Image (cartoon, rainbow, N blue to C red; front, side, top):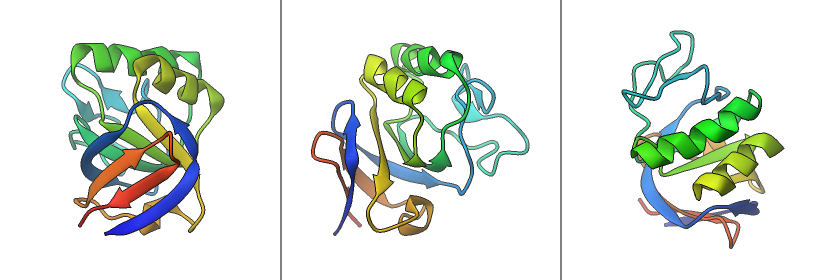
Length: 135
């Protein structure tokens, strides 16, 4: 088990399998929200399911539409368990709070896309500002 400390986040505690890419993230342009997969061909996670996974990405991109899309994804049951960023933007943080989706950023140990590997099981505790790598 390894503990990673980060800035205090939003949303409820979550557990899930990591899906990691050194890439940016837009809920509006990168995802097929009806099928639950990354759909932009240029994205490093193209074709992979994000449903119930802990997304580990560089930064958020996009505007206000990305925020309400997180809520829509959660309501439809096709949402990530949590999202971890090197740096989130305020709009996506607001969307995660509305959706009650765990979101954290600014990790003390460095680039989160290098600290976590795809397939690792993570426990995300936004209120405590910590992520546990369970395996």
